[in-house]
Image 1 (spheres, rainbow, N blue to C red):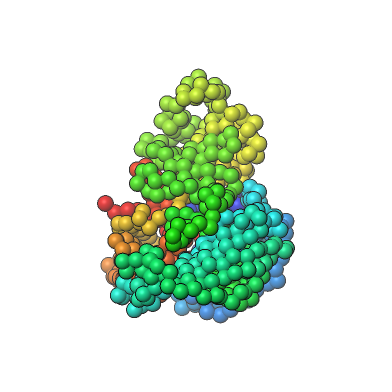
Image 2 (cartoon, rainbow, N blue to C red; image 1 turned 90 degrees about the horizontal axis):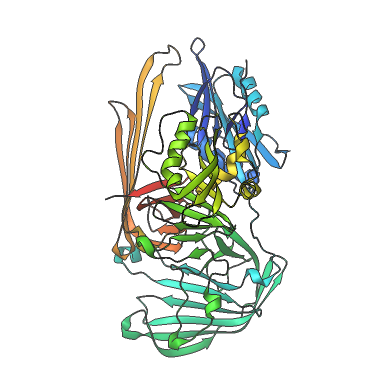
Length: 620
């Protein structure tokens, strides 16, 4: 079998088998071959990389379930090879049998994990004759080490990493309460102070109780390796009456001491689903009265999640004007989220822990760090045209860039000849607003929008993005552009319950043209269409509906499922639903911006799969 020149997809470079049919989609590139005489076939799919789950075993197991079990109904446990290591990557492969067209076939998964990324290659065939081709492709694979920015993990023996207020919210989501609209809550918050002391408060409110309970504790904390040791000095439980029968402090009714619990927690900070927003995670051997039951989270066992103070995680207001924190400590110590209520949405700025700050603007999202400014342009009519690279880039430059500059010098264009051809325009120009000369790079790749990077000079661009844009030509390595392409991921903004009001929908249509592997004759068309909607209304109520049409054209079947209940926003990057398909579910969530609107991005936290979010638009 002859093999073609090397190609690239995402962070994978490889040599595909010559003569196989290639199909490129957003998240997978596949190669297929069918021998009509023998009815033998083979398909190899290179899956776009996702965030690693922390180990090769966890990554392989998750990919096996999502890519093999769900796709091919493989029921037996995979036959796996020993884990291999190469250049910082760990590689695990396994396979299993499945039935296709009433005959035996084999599905094979090769998963590679490293540098906080996971990438997989799926191979399926009904013939041993293609194994050598699969092995040749796998042997040709090279993985590009993802461009990463040093994250401020912090020395965990330094108390500065804890300073601030961290809170957790919980409620009873029993069916009785949901059905009758009786919502309670308990809020818990740690105040870690610069002098090594701490305060802990919890507030319990329940419409079925005639009191509001307030627990207050104070003591000291100490770091020891990756542990934080909490030593309480005083702990009391107060019962307060309800003013006017509402969630307001009335009069102090009683006070009793609480047994002191000295506890050693394993301490870490954790990103929420790759969004680069910190949560404080405390782990212990057993549950404590202070923290309550362990958080319902799949990433850590025996753990509690405490989130930064935000609009959805407010400081507990104490009775009689009591204060536990200064204004300085009330602020999020790592400036993870900035509250900005313009444009009708609560959050219009996100400060990421790697130093970038994203701000929603009328025509773009502006992302800044140091002396670099990047504009993530919203889609605009006329900026994507059918033409050769140079006029295509220049057309977009004239529409998006040129009106804000003058005195353009050394303008150049470049591209790389790949399936998702990257386009680059660059030059020195003078900003109309400031009169300063800057170096501007305009970039687009695949389905991303146009990205405009503005630097004081070319050297500043090279220093951060690690390549000289003027050296890019048609055969350059695609991986050079990864740091610039990754700027599109900073179009992320936190969610607020009030911003969700209305109907959000997501539609999908897929069509398969089928041909007989025996005769090569056309065998019909398979259609899959779906419509999913969330309708958020007052009182944090919602209705959910999923409509699916699937089957052969002319004989398609229709299915519909519905759920309703109440939702909460446990933190600014998650939404919890009391009932979706017969059980409670939590989704990772964020908004991305387009011109005059937002896109709601959701990913089931219990089934993160490939890490790809489903996008929902607001219905008018």
